Length: 455
Ligand code: PFF
Image (cartoon, rainbow, N blue to C red; front, side, top):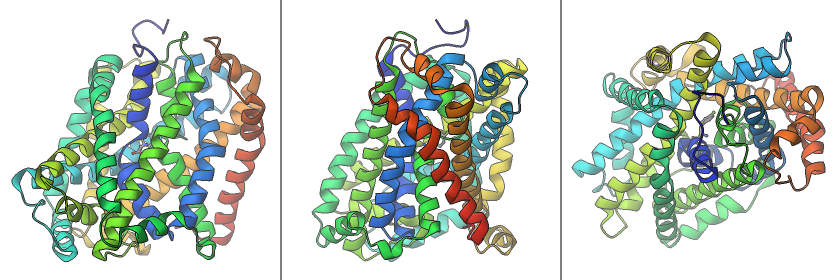
C-alpha cells in the first residue's frame, strides 16, 4: 500500500501509460529532431541510442527503485535513505530543475496550441511552401502577446490536472491518448518516407558520419537521452513512488524507455524525409518541427483533419509531460512542507508562469532576451541547455553515485524486485550504475568545463 492519501496508480498498465506520458512529449517530437539536425544526424542518433541503453535504462531503474522504496518526493526520498547528509540537495536540485524545465517547456507547448488553432481554422492545412510555413512560425513566436497568452493557457491546463491528483487526473488523461498518438505517428512516418526524396532523410538519420562527432554532440545526445526519458531530476522517483508493490517494476521501466525511444525515432522518420523532400535545412533549430510538419499535412488525404488531430495529440503529449514536471515540484511541497495539493499546484503554477515570461519573449519580441547576455542564443535556448542538458546529466551522474555507492545495488534490487519479479541482467545493471554511467557522464561534463565548449 502507498502511504495513505498520496494516491497510487491503478496497476502496471496505469503506471506504464502515465510514465510513458511523462517521457513522451515535446522531447521526442520537437527536441529530438531539431537536436539531431543541429548535430549532424546519424552520428548523434547512434550516440543517443547508446546512451539510452547503457545510461538511460539503468538510471530509469535506479530512480524507480528509490521512488518505490521511499514512496516520497525526491527530497524526502534522499532524506529518508541518507538522513542527515547533503544528499537531500540532489533532490532539491531535481525539484528546481523540474521548475526550470517547465518554465521553457510550457512556452513550446503553447506554440502547439497555436498550431492546433491554426489547423482548426485552416490556416495551417493550406500551407505548401517552406517559406510560407516559416513566415507563419516566425510571426507566431516573435509576438509579444500570443506566446505569453498561450504559455498561460498551457500552465493553467497543467495546474488543473495536477490539482486533481495521481490516478484521477494523470492516469485518465493518458490512457486513450497515448495509443492514438502512436497510430497517427506511424501513418505520418509512412507518408513522409514515401515522399519524393524521402529516403534521403532516412539515410541522414541512420547513416552516421563520425566526422561530425564532437564533445558538444556527445553532451547534446546525453542531455537528450535524459530529457526524453524524464531522468536526472526525480520525475521517475516521484512516479515510482506511486507504483504498487505487487507489480513488475523492472519490466514496466524498460517498456517505458523503449516506447519513448521508439517514438523519438518515429518522429525522426516523419521530420527528416519531409525536410529533405521540401528542401528545408536540417540545422534549422527549435523551429524545425513547426516549419516542416505543415508540408506533410498538405500531402495527406484529409490533411486538414489530420492536422487537427495531430496537433491536438501533440498538445496532449506535451501536457502529460508538463504534468510530471509540475508533479515533482508539487509532491515536494505537499510531502515536505505540508501544503495542500491544491495550494501547491496553483502557487507553483503561477511562479513558473512568471519565470516562463523571459523565455516566451525571447524569440524576437525583446532584443536582449533574443541574444541573451551576448551568448548568441536566446534565453529559451539557454534554459533548455542549462536545465535540459547540464542539470539532468549532472543529476543522473549523482544519482548513479548515490545508488551505486551510498544506498547500494542490493538495496535497489530489493526495491525493484519487491513483487518477486527478478531484474534480468542485474550484474549489468550494477556495472552500469556503479562504473560506466558515473565515469562516462563525469568525463563528458569535466571535458566541457575544461574546453569551455558550453553550448
Ligand atoms: N520527457 C519529456 C519529453 O520528452 O518531452 C520532458 C520531461 C518531462 C523531462 C519530465 C524531464 C521530466 F522530468
